[in-house]
Length: 71
Image 1 (cartoon, rainbow, N blue to C red):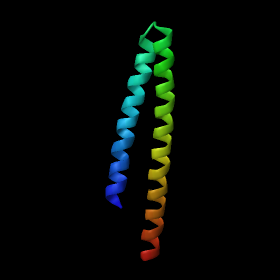
Image 2 (cartoon, rainbow, N blue to C red; image 1 turned 90 degrees about the vertical axis):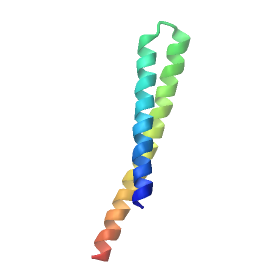
Image 3 (cartoon, rainbow, N blue to C red; image 1 turned 30 degrees about the vertical axis):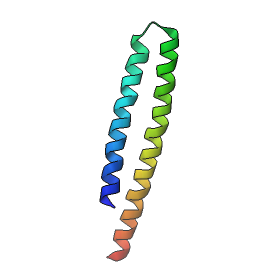
């Protein structure tokens, strides 16, 4: 279980880094088409971050419940 949680944490960190990169690119370009593309990519990546965080939270909560039941 910890391996899955560790993998999710790595995926979240990578997705957050990409999200930040897209946000920076959207802000730094004067090309409206590119700005729109990077903004869309940023929004899509935010959905990935949210989904991954939700999955990690679910696993952490269930892991906590399982640990409490075993004690």
